[in-house]
Image (cartoon, rainbow, N blue to C red):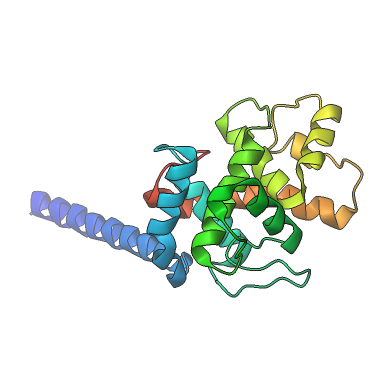
Length: 206
């Protein structure tokens, strides 16, 4: 009877692990807004067009998740609109800089995703960092608060190539509320939301 009892126990344990894994997968899938899946292929296409085949698509998806929760009609109290939450001045500037964007249309999902990955690339190309993960963290910080803040932080930092838990925690002379928001922005995207989109493509901080 003992071998049968042990087998039964292992089968039971195996079933419990399977159910737990399935529940975890469902929970993670539910954490991704339903609207996100409608834009998945568009994001992949636009990201690879700008960044190449190894574009960090999971990172960009996590960024859109943080910005708008994938709501095309999202509008912030300060006037940012669309999936990528572009301010009017920024959307006008980026559309004038890149002919591929055409006339600015921040509420158009394709335009918004194209502009987001294009702006991220523009920022990334102007940032020095210790590795790709930290460069993306600085890039996200710049997207949220401006490239000038990144440069000021790096200038006063003993570890200028490291953003997460280091340089991006330094206040370059802005309001405390702005510092708290900007410090939180790359962390929540890279550590909380990026893993949710791992199945979509490359991660910056895997």
